[in-house]
Amino acid sequence: MTAQTETFKFTAYLGYDEEAEIWRLRSVDITQGGILHKLSYPELPPLQAVLVESISEDVLAQLAQMNRSGEMMSNSDYVLALPGVKFQKLRVHTNFSIARGVEASFWFGSFSGQPLLALRQYAESLVEPAVPSQVGNLAVQALDRVVLPALNVVAGVRSGLRRPQTVGAFEDHTGRLMQEADSLIMYAELVKQLIVSTETAEAGPATRCFDAPPLKRVGTAV
Image (cartoon, rainbow, N blue to C red; front, side):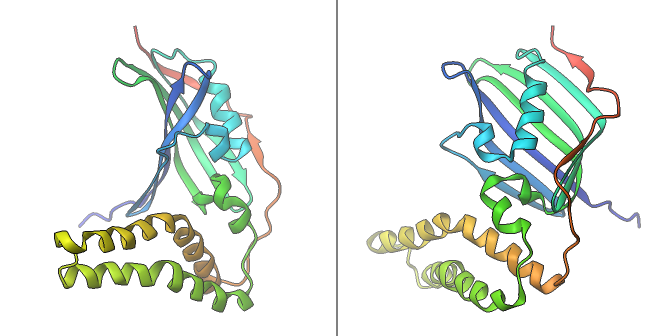
């Protein structure tokens, strides 16, 4: 039997706002081992409002050089090291759709460390290691804000909560879970840090390795 190679990939999907002349973020996919974690942004925030500065700067700089009608650029030697995570092998792709307009995606072919540190909403909370004294409070918050509502949904389904006369209660429970999804991610990662290890390697400021050749064009639409 051939052993399967674990995949570590960070992908973001973008749309171009012609009126505001900015790139907006639609969603982010993080593949870590055998698990796919998808983050959607229905309000379409600007790219730089969601991703940390060093990543958004690099991606926007590459997009500015590309044909928006359709082009792919690649740099297998790209490395971006941030405190707690390192991204490698950058690819950027643009495309034009009559229905959706100008679109783009970029992805890092591999990463090591905590990929959520690429997102501003998690970077500040996760970059500093949690201390053992926090574990009790974190566990209580996770149970109160996420686990208990989830159990309410399960209990409701088992008891027939989705009947017409009780569908409102079901929607209340699921709505709360959706609101607390970001908290669940943060709490889970903080608790995991404490369980896995109480020691965190020191990390320096963000550095880019651009000694390698610039992005290589691997295809341009006619």
